[in-house]
Structure formats: C-alpha cells, structure tokens
Amino acid sequence: AVQNYDVVVIGAGGAGFAAAVEAKSKGANVVLIEKMPTVGGNSLISGAEMNVPNSWVQNKLNIKDDTPARMAADTLKGGDFQGDPEIVGVMTTNALPTAEWLRDTVGVNFEKDNVFQFGGHSRKRALIPEGHTGTEVITKFSALADKMGIPVITNMKAEELVKDKDGRVVAVKAISGGKEYTFNAKGGVVLATGGFGANAQMVKKYNPAIDERFKTTDAPGTTGEALYMAEKAGGQLVNMGYIQTYPICDPISGVIELIADARFDGAILVNQEGKRFVEELERRDVISNAILKQPGAYCYVLWNDNIGKISNTVKIHDTEYKTFTKQGIMHTSDTLKGAADYFHIPYANLKATVDRVSQMAKDGGKDLDFHNRGGLKDLSTGKYYIIKAVPSTHHTMGGLKINTKAEVLDKNGKPIPGLFAAGEVTGTTHGTNRLGGNAYTDIMVFGRIAGDGAAAEAKAR
Ligand code: ADP
Image (cartoon, rainbow, N blue to C red; front, side, top):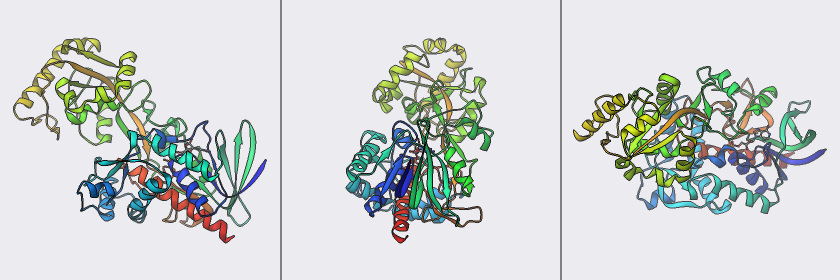
C-alpha cells in the first residue's frame, strides 16, 4: 500500500509528537508512525522535567538571574565540552518559547511553584510536569494530534529510507503485520526514533565497557535500528560511545529505584562485605564503575528512619516499596542484624561501617572516608531499609549529526535533502554526558524545528 503525505514522522515519543504537531500547524499533511503497540517511548516513562532558563516558575520563585547563556555554559561543561555549542545555543534560546508552547498550545500542566535542580546545573531551572512523569506530556500530545487530525499509526516499523535519483529522501518503507507499506514524503522525513539503550548488543559494540552485566532503564522500543537505517541513507553518526548509566537500579528489571533516592539525604552504599566503597553523591558514571568493581558487581543502599524522615521515599514510592519487598531485593528490619542477615552480609562488618558513619555524623557529619558532599547522617537506630542495586544503561548521547535546522548531515557535513532528525536519535547536543532535565528541552526544541523545516520544504516543492 502506498500513501502520500507532506511530512512523515518516524517515532511517537516526545520529539516525534512535537515535530508532527508543529508540521501540521504549518499546514502540512502529516503522518506519525510508531513501531510499538503504544506511543510514548522513553519520553513517557521519563520524569519529563525540562530545563528552561527564565521561566515563569523561576520568576515566581524569585530566581531572576538565569539566562540561556548560563544554561548553555552548564550544558557544555557537563558534557566535557564535547557537545556542539551552536546546537546547545539553539536549545537554550528556544527553551522558553517551546515551554510556553507546551503549556499554551499542547496544554501541558507544569507545577506552578516548584523547579528541580539536577546535577551540573548552576540554577534551579527544570519545570516539572504534573505527576512527575512524561504521562502528562504524552497524553496531551496524543489528544492534540487526534484533534488536529494527525494519523498516529502504531505497530508500524520504519525499515528503509527511499531516495530519488538526486539523493533526496522521498519516502519511508515500513512493515506492519508482515505487510510492507510505503509512505511518500513530499517535504521530508523526520527521524524521531530515540536512542539505543535497550539494545545490549549495540551498546556493547559502541562501548565495550558496558557489557552484559548491564540491564536498562529504557522503554523496550529503544533499540536504535533506525540509526543503521539512517546511516545506510548516508547519515553521519557521532559520539556513539558516550553512553550514560544510572547507578541505582533494580537488579531484576533494570528500572531506576526511585525509592533509593534516600541516597540524596544520607543513605549509604555498601558492598556484600558490608563496606562502603564510593562517595554516595558522586557523578553517575563514577558510582556505576565503582559498583562494578565490587564482589558480584552490585551494591546495597542502606538507610534508617532518621534519614527516611527527611526523604520520605518509602511513602512517596509505595508501589516500588511493595514490589521490591515482594521480589526480595528490598528488606525492612527493626535491627541492623536483621538487615545484614537477610542479605548474608557479615554483621560485624556492617556494624563497624554503621558505627563509624554514625560517629562521624555525631562529630558534625564530615565524611573522612569518602567525602560525601551532603554530610553523613546518624544510622545508629532502626528501622533499617536496605535495597540491592546495580547500574543500568540509561541514555545514549551519540547518534545522528544534525545542524541547527535539524537537518541530518552526511559524512562530508552536508545536509541530506529531505531528512530531518530530533531527540535522542541525534548525537550533537550532550557531548559525553547528558545533564538531568536536558533531554526534554532537546527533544521538544529540535522536534519543532524539524517539523517546521519539513513542512516548509513541502510548501516549496
Ligand atoms: P525521544 O525522546 O527522542 O522522543 P523516545 O524514546 O521518547 O525518543 O521515542 C522514540 C520512539 O520511536 C519510540 O516510541 C520507539 O518505539 C519509536 N521507534 C524507534 N524505532 C522506530 C522505527 N524504526 N519505526 C517506528 N518507530 C520507531
């Protein structure tokens, strides 16, 4: 079957929806195809916080000195200066109008008087969607796409980009239920297929240090074949070896253990020997690597009610608490001995560790062993909470090289006519390390730019 459109968007995550809605609002006839049975990708399961300098929430909270330039400086530094300054500049200057568009046109509700400050950011600048996940954003996008008459076709996997004799991308070949479909794209194709963190083989190929020991926090569709599809069409892949792991994840499923965020308020990390081995507030990659060097390549996060009072994670993440407890990877005990015995950790060692931490806490909190920058907390009394944790693949920084118009560049740095890309499939923004809250800004800003560009080309042809 052959269908004709102005713009074909591949991948129904945040970047794809932004591109489709933008292109449609510019008058283009748009289709959005998605290989999975449901839409949303990683954008759906993400916390979906979005960094925006100078936002209305910052204003309300009296944070008056944030600027796109400040956010750009933080972003470049956070990626060890391997991100593209021009691309980062476009992201940060467009962050505010794009957030306003999400609020006013898409109808996304953001918390009105709270912003997050993720690691590496010099200001509190991340807007938080209602519910603290991407559900709010993707639900609103789905409803809007429906209202605008954009067909969103699930279970439809793009397999090939078709070029005409002049080298322009003019169609997408896709498969659904064993049948082949062709989607002609008069103006352009937007690749918004996400990263490859859930493809263990591909992760290992580009970064051999991240091998089978790692599970993933990612949505199951995050498998990156579309990167090979684009490479076949001449696209240039960059920064593919830069892959971010999240250190504290469920050893069974790989998902992030949000309950263990008690770590930000004083929970300690110990190994199977009951000994600490790393600063609990180090960079994600440093903690991940340290965990892999421990016996069994896992660790435990340990805290007590004294810390729980502050972080309150057991209450906030009640579903996790029940699931992890049932799975046997989390245990609650009135006594430290109970916590140690449950996981066969030598009690004498664990007691020595906890005694030393509590002593340092009493002496003012200064951590003489691992320099925990938050300071140590008293762990001398129960209840105790202990959870087993491993690092998981989280975000792939590498991908297609694009320019500031979201055009995909070939190996000589020249745009491939008719081919645009936005979101985690691109590799130009984050350098070695993506900062928290920057993925959403990136995918929304460049999703819109890509949709706009493809719609303009459809008009011009
Ligand atoms: P981003 O954050 O960049 O928007 P997401 O992971 O949220 O990325 O969304 C990417 C979407 O693209 C996912 O829903 C994924 O299932 C989909 N996808 C990936 N490869 C293909 C493909 N070849 N054809 C159609 N959809 C794809």
